[in-house]
Image 1 (tube, rainbow, N blue to C red):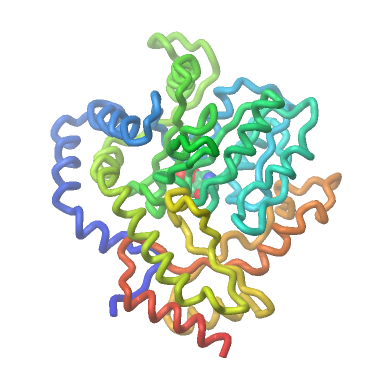
Image 2 (cartoon, rainbow, N blue to C red; image 1 turned 30 degrees about the vertical axis):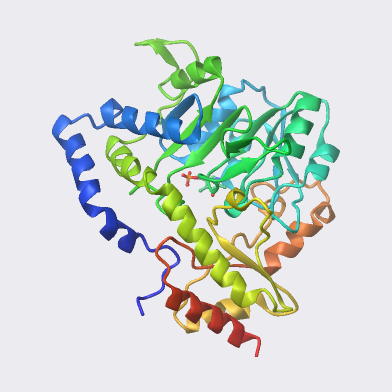
Length: 376
Ligand SMILES: *Cc1c(COP(=O)(O)O)cnc(C)c1O
């Protein structure tokens, strides 16, 4: 059996090596290392794939979130609501821009932001909501959009873990995550479902004016060369990364399908176990792209399970071990930790198993039986 890895980028590379060599060589020959035709080509391929009017590539997912928020022209002190249970980048950019992060609890079934908690957190200063499609599962977008519309709030999707997922609205219409709100941010970090061979990110929007404004922000606030109309940043997607992403985008649905198959296999091993809760899947199979396969471990020592797996050469992850409200950088003494009962519970229970498009059935069987052995 091949050595088990959390993410097996090497096997994936072996499969697309020749195609990547061709597109990379194109970049090297043209020497258009920044922007240029390869970045343009990837951008239009991704616009077509997502069914969105504008993709604005940038340097990484954290920049994408920050730039999306800059695009909304909020003012210091404006409140932005996001989930307590997510990667810190989401709240980091809110704080960097001197906006006020308002953290709310999540739904125990989906791990995603709880719409009821959003409603309770809204004040006259609330300007935006950032739902995160955590672990690849689309958040409850019908409810969140309804709240955003009712209170006239911007909706910024953090789609770093959800690229390729499709949301089916209550009325039956479908759209890709990242195109459901006003603006969205994604990451092409190597281990993401669509990962580059270095850093990368992008912003998506259907709003022409916002897209124009943001294209200036990513380029030092310039709309005409050497005329700086707003304070911007320097955030660009490397053309060599675009060459990798252009190839991998063609395989994204295949990769996500493979992840889904692996998830179904895992769940078949665990579904009747009374100390394990398997990831929730809605009836709509396309709304989860399994960036992570995350179990909840009940009435047992989760960290002992981590040690047990590591002892058997199985890597695993705890995403995330500390709620954002309890992080030193983001702790707010006026906020009661008891406001986050679900997150406080999840951080003790979650464990993510190896998940990638190259997992083999014998690897999955070995991982699953090693997990089950722990409880015997
Ligand atoms: C990875 C990730 C980011 C940040 O992306 P980078 O490209 O690493 O900056 C932001 N939000 C979430 C939810 C992520 O998983």
